Length: 256
Length: 338
View 1: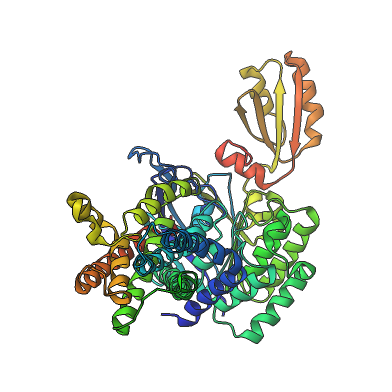
View 2: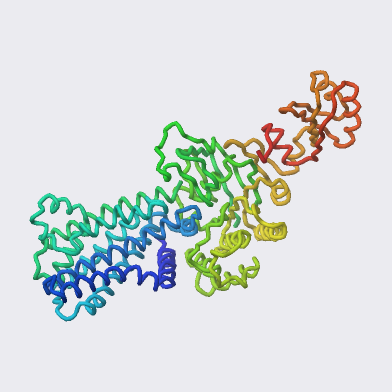
């Protein structure tokens, strides 16, 4: 394993992310913050939503921001670089095996997802305060959960980015990411689906459910949430599944 | 120490659409377009190609589009997986020891595949970093290469706005950045203006003089002739001739090719052409008659008078001197440009 090459590849991605920092910032945070503002501030302030909704919403917003960032950070550049310009070729010719180049993409995506998660917490708190009751009672569990969330989003980005063409980006949003968010227990807890038993079972195939519920369990444990063990088990399963699929798709696309 | 290149019985069958510039540039894929994979739509690109490029040699692969040149380079540079057969760079098996092989090779693709998120200088510096070159050395090398390829002024600009020629020069600079032992160039002078082409040839010769191996593909005879020490002519994934440009040209019967067109071709006319002094071979090709001979223009008066006396009006004459084009035509019956 050639660590010098690996870190040089990471440095390249960090350099490009810094160059596009403003754009990345807007595309990552604008939508969740608008959501926080309307639902957490306007709707609660005007009495349409109970005050507790603020605290319930925050973990979901973190989960959306992290997932979006991870998928976006890996998938979008890959889709562009695998197009006819084959920009990625110079990295495929770096003295490291193709699988490690994919791993590097995953690590870069995870780092961006973690930054997004950690930045959205204070931002959302600023918009929502006062009245948000978050507490990190189990920091290690919290750390493990956000790592796993970063992992599945980044691996998912690899799988999507290595399987899609530029002309299908719109479809990726409308067919994959948007349903994921709405059925991801982001704006409501999983227990809110008790009255819709079929839907409640069906959404369990959505990894974002475990991200939202896991963050809820560690940040706002006062609300009903899925058991932490189940959340961690499911996240590990999705991380592994998307990693395997992502690596396979990447190698298929990288080598003719 | 110079490093050679070897392949043994390389075969490559594509399951999807035509591989255009398989080594780089872009690869069209039917499956990427959502078309169903058709088991019958197998396209053989290489059919048992064995070749050996000696250490420190400038070797050319010459052939028409679709001959398998880019696929060969793609396999040798880890970008295309062979269906069967083996390839080595020096002692390293290309497929078993990819990372070591990538250290030894520099690749200039058919279409520039520069990293559009970076400036010209960053492309070189990051490339150096991928190859583990220290910060000071990679910055020095990047500056030297920008200077050499006349890109210093554009060094801090994003490459998106570069012209084709500038991108091509930067691709070559990038391939040289880690000082590889073997340099692969896929159609290096396609799309270059004549001035840049001469600069490129100089740089390739200089690189070779430093003891490096160069493998290039081209369908430009002039380039193959001017640069290559040995050439392999390939067509439909087969090698059809191998040797120095001089030897190859000498192997064409006579050397000169006179492409004639008559208003009225008869068997008798062919026989009489064959009988002319200096004519080695006469072939009919479509509406033309190809005459291979060891002299060119001096045959014309005799051919004209022969045509007049046979009642076959001579309507077109084209004389080509000994060239690789003629060689290719002789071996395949087709022009390199077809």
